[in-house]
Amino acid sequence: MQRLRQMSIFAHIVDAGSISAAADRLDLSKSVVSQHLKTLESELGLPLLRRTTRRQTLTTTGEHFYQQCQQLNTLADNAWQQALESQQSPSGTIRITAPHALMSTLIAPALSELLALYPALTPELISSDRKLDLTEERIDLAIRVGNSEGSTLRQRRIGEFRDVLCGKPTCTPDSRYIANHWQGNPIQHRFEACSGTTIRQTTIRQIEYTPGCRTDSFHSCLALIEAGAGIGLVPDFILRQRPTQLIEMLPGYQLAACPIYALHPYGTLRPTAVERCIEAIEQKLNGNWPVPVPDYAPTSHGKT
Image 1: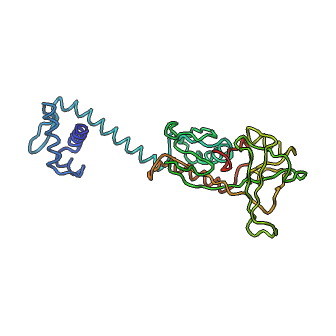
Image 2: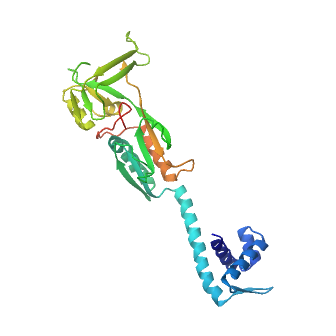
Image 3: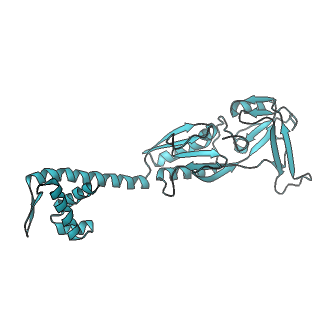
């Protein structure tokens, strides 16, 4: 590393025209710059500059050596500038993972808008309902449902949604329960009375279900519920934006909110690309959810 520093200083001496000018440019003392040059020439065992009180000229060897040292400085300057520019305008590859449902209903729409602003950004999307190892998979950002307890990753809550127990008007809370693959057996739900409800009933209702049917995707689960096969959980954002004839089985009551977190392996100095992606996803999450309904990922009721 010291040798590279000496080579860099040598190129600056040649570019500046003198040791004094190079010292001013590098904000170093003249003696420090002079010593670096002397050490470099000593280790090489040959002179690089012919110096007089009025001027300096390169030796033949020094001329060839200078060309290579100048290229090192140019490469270093370019690398520095590109790093600064990447912080101002995100570019390059960013690997993002999220559950299948959130990838389609949240991540993809948010990134589509972000790419219009930063076309040099290259997202690599990994849809998975499993908690992937961010370091092993070289993942820059993970969007997950529920807090990742015990995780050493940086995580920030960026929004939430609620599941709603619903079905066709012909159904009742005692109808066949349509379960997702991530839900256990038996399935237990704890409902709380909505704030400000006028229903004069207990504020807490706990209900246990044995699945009467189980599917491996939310799309299949929703199709069965809409067909009148039974009742099940549907996220509130889908109920708001998807025209259905479903009704809540327990009006005036609600399940606990399902928080959504953004996780990343970086410390306080996060890449700008990660920052911009989190901002775009958070804005989309707390704004208008897109209409398409894909496979839904596990919520805090199950594993994410």
